[in-house]
Structure formats: C-alpha cells, structure tokens
Length: 206
Image (tube, rainbow, N blue to C red):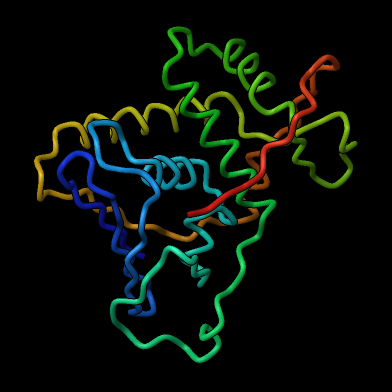
C-alpha cells in the first residue's frame, strides 16, 4: 500500500491519498489543519510501521477497513467491501497509546532504558493491554525500550522532512504488512504502578 501526504498551505484541512495493493484508491481526510508540525496521521503511520503494529489504523486500512473519512477515488472495490468493515477497537486503542508514548519518547533529553521504562509506566498504566497468561490488572504489553527509541528517532526524521517541504510537495510512504507473530514476540510485560491513574482513553478515528 502506498500513502501520499501532500503539503498544503497552512490552515488548510489536510488529507492523504491511499493506494491499496488491490488497486483501489481512497482519499483519507484529516480532522486537523496543515502546519509545520508532522500531521497526526503520519505520526501514526510511522509508529505503527516501526513497531510492526498489524491491527492499528494503517494496518486496518491496508487490510480493507474503510473509515467514514475515506472517499473512494478510483479502482474497483471488491463486492464484500460494499459495506464498510469495522476496525478493531482494541488494536486502535493500543496504536493510539503507543503513538502517544513514542511522541513523548522523541522529546526526552535522556532516552536511557530506565527513563523510557519510567515514561512507559506513566503513559500506559491507565489501559492494560494483556497477553495470554498475564493478569489484566497487573501488566501491559509494550515494545522494549530500544524499539521505542528507534521509533522515536524515525519520528524525528520524518518531522524534519515534513518541516522542509514546500507547499505542493509530498511525503510518500510504502506500507508493508506486519507479521503478527513477530509483533507478539517483540512485546514484553511491564508492571503497572499500583498508584497509577484509573482514567481510560477511548480510541477515535476521524
């Protein structure tokens, strides 16, 4: 799947052109306006790509999920996609949380494993994401500090590339399917702080 993000004039509503591997092309509208900062949808794409998240926003689109903000441009849609597929809320919530975590890691002065672990507990303690054999109340599953630091570095690179774009230029990304088993192997359990927050963040999509 190929995704193109054009750089529009500041304060215009952004969008992306999504060319799926089956030849169908969509325009994905954004809820945010253009500016010098890296668009939200690119942040998600980079984090999901680097952490090999297969069930987040972009993995879902590649697999056939069609959001209400997506307009069909060209290409023949298979009959079974006449009705929009529903995204998996747990996967999207996890992708949202990990994107927020990686953004926070990207601005850390100290990206040591200990500091990334501290930030992970702070950012992800409110919503446990469990794996078989884990106690839902005691653990969340997240990538290791090295993977989070690498994703944060990739985010910084793309932010710099976006900031250099002129109006009318674009950033283009190729999305390759992640290996769910590989993703699972990269996860580890991180104990939740006993005095952590209890609020819950709901997944959203434009």
